[in-house]
Image (cartoon, one colour):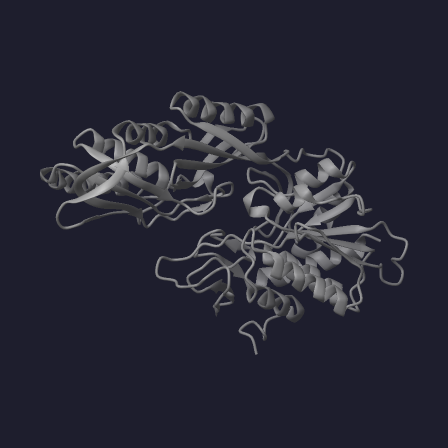
Amino acid sequence: MGILSNLEPAPVFHYFEEICGIPHGSTNTKAISDYCVTFAKEHHLNYIQDDSNNVIIFKDGTPGYENSAPVMLQGHLDMVCEKEADCDIDFTKDGLSLELQDNVISAKGTTLGGDDGIAVAYALAILASTDIPHPPLEVVLTVDEEIGMLGASALDCSPLKSRIMLNLDSEDEGYLLVSCAGGISTLAHLPVKKEEKAGTKITLTITGLLGGHSGVEIDKGRANACQLLGRTLYALSQKVSFHLLSVNGGLKDNAIPREAQAELLVTDTADIAVVRQTIEELSNIYQKEYHAVDSGIKLLLEAENGSSSEMVMTADTTAKIITALVNLPGGIQRMSHDIEGLVQTSLNLGILSTKETEVTFSFAVRSSVETEKSELVSRITCLMEALGGSVTNSGAYPAWEYRQDSMLRDLMISIFEKQYGRKPVVQALHAGVECGLFSGKLPGLDCVSFGPDMNDIHTPNESMDVASVQRTWNYTLEVLKELK
């Protein structure tokens, strides 16, 4: 028996636990896609599986709903794969190790993938049911949402007849999402030149940060490990001479980096003491600056014994990388003047990577104003070109604009008030959801995004509340019942 086998609603947690046992990180979605296809075959449901591994499953309306307007249930199959430093899971091969404590589900040492495994579990449980009243259903399960909504971008929507969509990709029960920012993935490239130098090799690690979703948590004031690394390297460069061997940090462009590392070669061994002192001073400064929002920041230094000869980046390349890290924009750029408390424009340096011939800087750029999104890309491009680099963009998706007249929103508000005895919060969100892409592809689409309570998504502290999953399940079934 599974660890979730005694929880209700039993079908939902059954499918969620099965999903957690299948590796399904972004770009590694064939197995989970095939699992959904096998499910459709076993339940004698028509389906489409495309070359990207997107899956659409169709089910007729139940008695009395045969002629109702079709409804789309939508979520994504991929998850963000983050883990603690001492966790030995191989996300490409291993399932998650689930934990249940105080009616809260998490995964040992890793992200849980409740974003968006719970949407898939809800959908499969509804498709498998024989006693849940519902209109004709089109269950659309996309891939690679977490790396730029690539699956939704590639999806052929021509087979879809529904113009009512329930997107189950939100993490706050009681909130109905009706608008979101658009975004783009921007990759900056800086060429690397190398030379041979002798000196002492030092590894500098910035760790202990909280991280988080770069759309949902961007307004929490948390530190970005890659940006702190740039600040640290610049401070060191003002006191000692060194050459970089590598700079690396972060795993996903839409997750705020929790750790970053630089390898550098100090040519004068007498400077090592200065480096140690500077790192200690900066560690105290960072802890003081972020004490209220990111108190676990640590700077670690490891110096090799003796001198060695290494192929290092030239002084010019080293200076350019530090200049880029210090000056590339990051974090909130503008707040909305129309919606109080809403981040309008931001970007996140999510992945810093050293390759053989270049260093790359990968950003998730978000804005509900298209021109501001373009302007941020231009700022990155301007700086990189001045440093002799270049920029490539991918995965652009449009903003999901607020719909003044929404039958679905009004219905869901009414049902929520009856079930909960209070009004839901109707909100716009800075994080991107696939509703924008589907709205662009399906003119007239009426959609709302919602979901159960989840905390610390995209981090190893991610958790999901069991009672909230059950309430949201009941709410979803009532919405389907009323869409007759």
